[in-house]
Image (cartoon, rainbow, N blue to C red):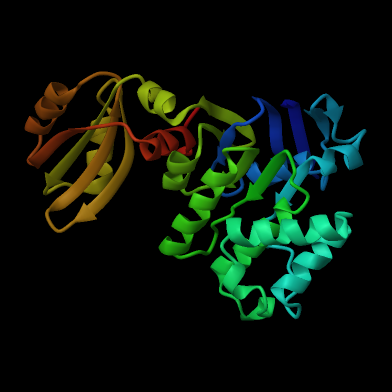
Length: 310
């Protein structure tokens, strides 16, 4: 349904996207993950026609977004990170206005507003001014706006940004419900959100696709090795990290200080607990814990997007 082909976007001398290739079939809920500045929002803005690419193209049902922008926009509902709301309008008046912009007929308009008020959980705030709503309700109203014309594709840019944990769960539930009938693409850096709502994850790092697949597939792939957590007492952090990385096949994903010492998260090509133990014996450090861990999407994400990741 959507083909992203060799997509490049430059801002002056800065390259935001560096040849992205992704194909998205109909009916998939896909999470676009990456650290801040990775290129997620730029990709979505090109898809929705708000930016033109420097090179490459995006096709939606065979239509190039730069050559047929109006036709493509009719197929897409878009909620940018800052929801496009008019703060002085009542929620009902705002949605009625959006329905007019989408050229909905009178009977169809009232039916659609009622459907969306139920789906997005905003029935109780329909006659309140937008400015009086919480951030969570504003996001729900933004979702209703994006869904007004019943688009085939829903594009959401950081839909849970700034929400509290309860609001995140509520928005995530709405996304899952919408995903039963539509193709949904949303960007996020909240990994639990992607695991809970997505059938597929694309990780973007430094403007390129670093990983692409289901959450289970990515966790099973990982570094192809083991994840080991060690707790060491009496060590200098930099010396400890250097010592661990001197072992062939080990890289340090994370290091944290605790009351008992320094906790390292190690990515290993194989189970290297024996080598870690023997390395510790050469020093005066005390190895308090060494625990093998299961790969999670968070581990994969951090491994892929570390500064020295390839």
